[in-house]
Figure: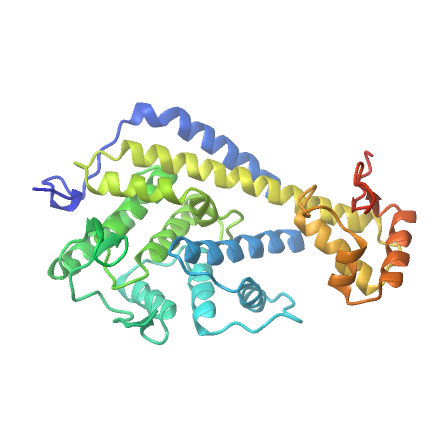
Amino acid sequence: MLQYVWETSNWPDFRWNSESLLQPLADARKRQGRFLRAMEDIGFEDSLRTYAVAIEEDAIQTSAIEGENLDREKVRSSVAVHLGLSAAGLRKAGRVVDGLVEVLLDATHNYKMPLEKDRLCRWHAALFPAGRSGFQDIVAGEWRNVPIQVVSGAYGRRKVHYEAPPPERLEAEMASFFTWWKNSRKKTDGIIRAAAAHLRFVTIHPFDDGNGRLARTITDMALAQDEGLGRRYYSLSAQIMKERDAYYRMLEKTQKGDGDCTEWFLWFIGCFNRAVEEAETTLSTVLFKAAFWKRHAETMVNERQRKVLNKLLDAGNGKFDGGLSTRKYVGMTKTSRATAWREIEDMLRKKMIRALPGSGRSTAYEIFRESE
């Protein structure tokens, strides 16, 4: 008969091969340290913007992992309002989006506060303000009172990937989790602790729904405690989304295992490392944008030109699909083709953009870089 990890005699005491983790963990720590040192060198506004981008990505991607697609503009609006940034022109977020953003911000900004049942249940209630998940009613803000399985496949061909502990065990399981959370902070490496917290929480699966999102939120809180920062500058959820198949595969394998979590920890450390690597790219984009506008502080441009330039800068080097064209300029600014052409020519003369080489009959443009 299949035995899940929570049914083993050593649960919840995970085991792992420390020697196997040493080098991957050292590599991740090196990248993390380099990135955080770089963040110390940027100004407050750029730091806040990087934080906003990370929270936006966390909200979008932690929902996408569960198959829920949020409106990015509404998420951006909610993040902007909560961080005191401009939300002008953005669609107002609803209760669901606001609730998720509030949870993510509370977990990271207030990382020093205790994680207890009341706080966790308030997070869950914020994720489901109407007490519904899709078309189903759920108990929001309370432990589930029914058995739960993680399944996939169409009706009639369902595959059970995992079955969580029965509801009568939840109070004791979560009390044990909160005690471990408090006591492990000074005893366990921060990244390993984040990986263990994620695995342990999602294995207990204490709520009717939202367990994955809350597991990733708790993971972010653990990493914030490790770094001693009230801001998240990289999105682990975005990286997990990119590696979603491996994420679920590794979870299932570990939850059906005997308590040896070495493979899970190795995957998690690698995922963390790649998330920080991606954030380094984002940071370079933020720094380049700041340098660009500093260089052109006295350059006269109108609001249409500024809007288009910011779109190019936010996309990053070479990532504005196909480059800027006159047609795209018209679409973004709602101006005439003749005006678009004149304003593009003006930016060319001022060395704010340049023509992409080999763009054929329809010239495309990108941001001008000083080294070119």
